[in-house]
Image (tube, rainbow, N blue to C red; front, top):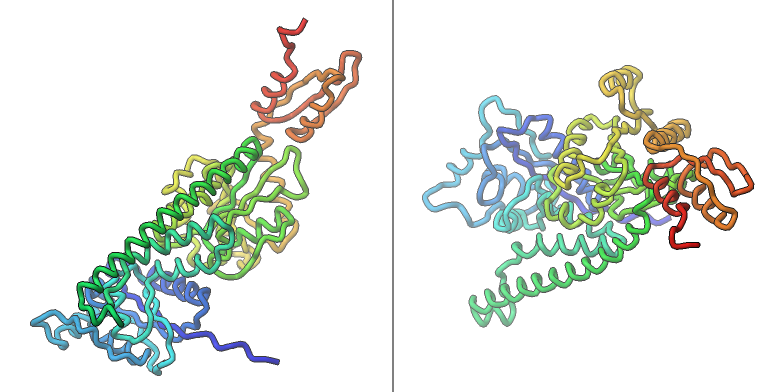
Length: 454
């Protein structure tokens, strides 16, 4: 039996700013650890510090920076200490305020660390200085998320969207690092090469956007075919259990994994057992705190599923201690994309992991929420019934007379609503149909006498 290869190691870096509560700081750092783990690394240490602001040079003060370098095997030097400021002054800046708790890094060095992950969005120069000081590659939070998206994107649209976001992120981080022929030719040549690389990236982004526009037109054609259908979109924080609920509601083989951003591609399936009229369910990309704006913009085609849905089910992991902050993030993203006017229901998932007292408190606080566990068939069946009831609440009933010469319309009625009765009479079939007003109006127009006929 072969032993699986050892995962590369990573160290997390974070600064707690004055306006960030300790609980929120810890939740964000824990989430970064999950992101880095999803990326394929084992987190071996955390280096954290309380400061008024991120150090301009390399995020951390010099003292903490040297501590980080000891873990990674780096020198701890960036060569960027401002003139007139001694290392002792810089260290004094890095000391947290009095009585301010500070998490310490693990003391044992890990010279085989392959990544430093920073729980902030930082500048290209800060990123370069961190790499100089630590001797290993560094990624900020945005970079980590984009790398995960890059690895998980499967469909054509998702790959295009991710590459646009990745190149947009990469362009300002290109380095003036002439080597080989450029080094011999001097600095100016290196700068010219850098600008050439940036121009190539801009051209490539333009190509990708044009290709994505073509792809979106094709997607729009597919959406137009479904426009009359009843549509439910599952939205929520990443790893809240949307794909598990999707799989349970539709009987499909949607990918389900216990990792962040396992789903990046929109999946659309019919509710199963199939309802009459048909109801479509779509799974969407998960949200996360500090989700890069470029990714929100890039994944517009995916998030449009939420905008065009008849009903949103916001799935929340009730077992996560940080679920309230995750719920707030989801509402924020829905506001950003303009989906707050779409009817929505709150679905607390994974309730089988809650104590009876916690479940009772949740039910009392959110009496209209749907409390479910996708592991329980009865819970899933109840969700299905509530989805159908949501659509049927707006249905109307009508009697329509269908001539025998047009009996094909009766099959359409079965597809588009609930046929309550069929009476065969001399003039034709009288159908008692329950459906939405738009569908009933369409059938009335179809069956209206044609004044041009004699």
